[in-house]
Image (tube, rainbow, N blue to C red):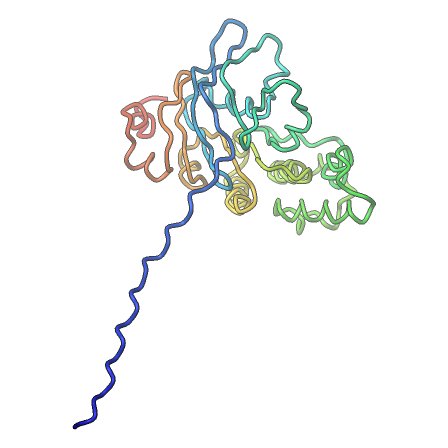
Length: 274
């Protein structure tokens, strides 16, 4: 009998590549409302902010976006006569629960303001201050390492490493804002809130801040308030549109800007109001 050639085994079926896992939720708001005295600034805000992404809040002035941002780490507590309803949770833990240490909350949720506010101290002491207060460094060498790491994360080390003992007030506006970012990063937060961090800066400084935001999202959850819709489109992964104290729409930034679900969102993005 003729010798039979062994059959070639059929190639194994190739499985489709697994879809990337959805991001974890860092911050969740449930029916959150907020009042300044008798004025209701936020109306039943419900949203989820994903971890290690950049989420932008957009909307006209007075729409509530900065109020909501400051509610996440309870900065609004410093304003007399305010109150809230509903809840905001950070990794499932209510930021308004009884007994919460607000100082520790603000360590976990750092804040960068519209106008840079460096302390009237040296560049080194600006970054080291929070670490000292929170006991994050065991000695001078640890503190030196933390200051350098934070300044590198804020893309400022190469510009100031030879003058750390000089006053932070001598830095340019863009450098001062990056120093404030380094100061926030030095206490090792989980979330970084930015309230129009580049609105007072020139285009070159603004570009550096935007590049920095893009790089930092690999390690931090970032929430940014901006009036600049081009900026939101450039730096954010998700966008939330606020109007008259309400959350009108939230979704992936590319979808919000190219195919919004709500007519009010489209009208604002195309410049018909706001």
